[in-house]
Image (cartoon, rainbow, N blue to C red; front, side, top):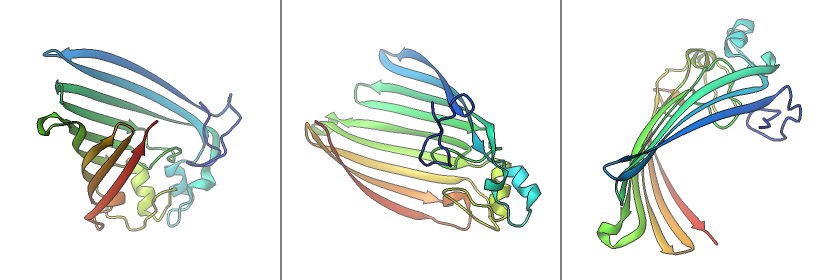
Length: 217
C-alpha cells in the first residue's frame, strides 16, 4: 500500500518501491457451543520517511524535534490480534491487542504503541428491538519507552505534545446504544469516560458524549 509523505496526511508517497506499507493477516474461524467466532492475527511493516525518537533526544535533549531525524525507508513494524465470539444469537464478545516497536514516529492514524481492549455487544431481541444494539467496552493504551521519553522532554507528535510528562497508560470506558429508526437509518448515542488522556496522569478524567447518524441506501 502507499504511505503518506507526511505523518498522517496527504498526499501519498508515489515512491512505492522505496516507501510502502505491507500487511499480512491470518484468520481462524471456529464455533463455541454452536456459536460462530473468529480469531485474526495481523502483522505489518511500514517503510516511510520517518524519524526516530531516541535519535531526536540525542540531537536535542531539551527540545527534541523528530522531524529533523527523518530518513527515507525507515521501517516500523507491529502486530495485532483480534477476536470475536458469539455467546448466543444476540450476545457477542470482542477483544483486540496491538503492539508496535515504538522506536520510530507514528506515521498513520494515532499515537498508540500498545493497546488492549475488550467488550460486549447485545442485540435488542430481549426488549423487542432486534435491530437495536447496545455495547460496552474498555480500552487501555500505552506508549513505548522511547516515545514516552520524547514527549516528556517536550517533543511533539502530530496529535499530542507534552513536556514534564507525568506518564501513565490512557484508560477509556465506552457505552453506546444504536437505535434502528428505519431500515435505512440508525441513530447512536455514545458515552466515553477517559482517564489520563494522552498518557498524562495529571489529565482527566473527562466525559465525552457523542451522537452518530448513519444513513444507508
